[in-house]
Length: 74
Image (tube, rainbow, N blue to C red; front, side):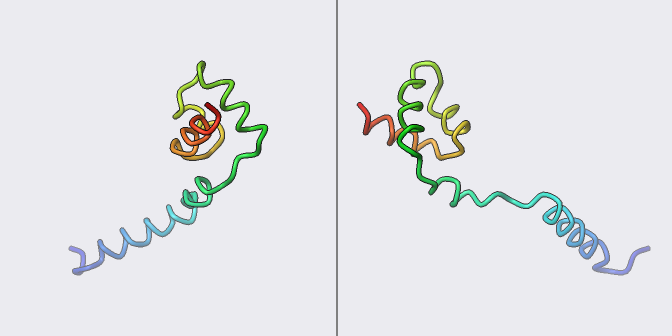
């Protein structure tokens, strides 16, 4: 039988290892990244072929940023 609290310690250490092996991507820096003018033109041209979500994933920005680019280039 395990002493009380031993399982919690194991869970904490395994979560720490997972965090070390797979660090989380800083989503704020990705979505705050500005798109170059050429990227904005490419997004506008490929809008009919791909959805805003697909374009956002491709250029590593938020979907809202893609929508803003499309709205500004109408």
